[in-house]
Image (tube, rainbow, N blue to C red; front, top):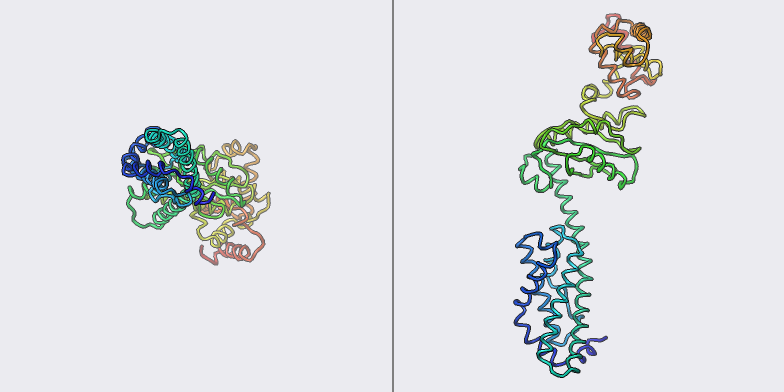
Length: 434
């Protein structure tokens, strides 16, 4: 219907009643706001004076605009969404109140205003035909007004929510970067920005995947955090298929369940040791990154969950990977091979050294006969060209590197391995110093 046609249907009495009610807009707006605040649980439960003030501004603006449209015989084509209504919407989004509550406020507000408007018409108009015409026109306009405003608010709600989420996510990311960069931060203010208490004992994790499906990875993040069972984590994306997260508790959390956790295939988890406060937030994260680095160097088939506490020594020894390769080759000599037979000998010797030279204990741990342990140790000594008890600390370190990193530090036939063996031979002949 055109504006002219709609104006033609507007009865003089409708304009007169609307003009009489216009000065009462603040009173009507306040009464409507009080009614809506009490009637909508999502609002009432907030006990928020600022939200109540935003609601009052919105109801007053909407009531005033509807009455002006009726008083001037205008159509809903002349209506715009009041800025105060948009302000109330932004307050709703900031507080996490759902869109359904906002739309309910308009439905209830419409019904509330219609009841009072209809009563005002009845009090003013005696002729039933004139009353019916006035009610029909004003009802159509109010419905059209609410529909128009709600259509805009639905779009604005999504836009505002996305903007707020991007802003909050950006703020969290910037705060985390500042902490990880060693910048001084106010613990209380940073905790508010993060929505995460920095005073806690933290366990930092890095969860990653070679797959491009981030949705599945997000589920893995939630599952890993739930394994610790210590509250809502702080999650920050750190790559296309990688997340960093922190889980905190007032007491140092136990991580044994996480060590035993088996994520879905393709997902890798590395985590640091529990540490307290802002410094602990950073330290546990650094350890998680180191654990993730060691896992990236590990051979195929290595465990998907890597604890820094278990790979700390390897992490330190492999800080300079080329030198670590040289070290392994020079200490292992002919045991520096990726062959399965060499690996079996290395594993046995490492267990033997860790057990303090107890063949019986090693036999029990490896589920082999004690004579088998003795044979493997003897065979390894033949390949080493010395007793395993000689320079046992260095040998243990080299064996740990080989066990954790496999091909990353073992002989693959490249030049570095030949150079390392030459260095080893010179040391054995006394022509070179370690």
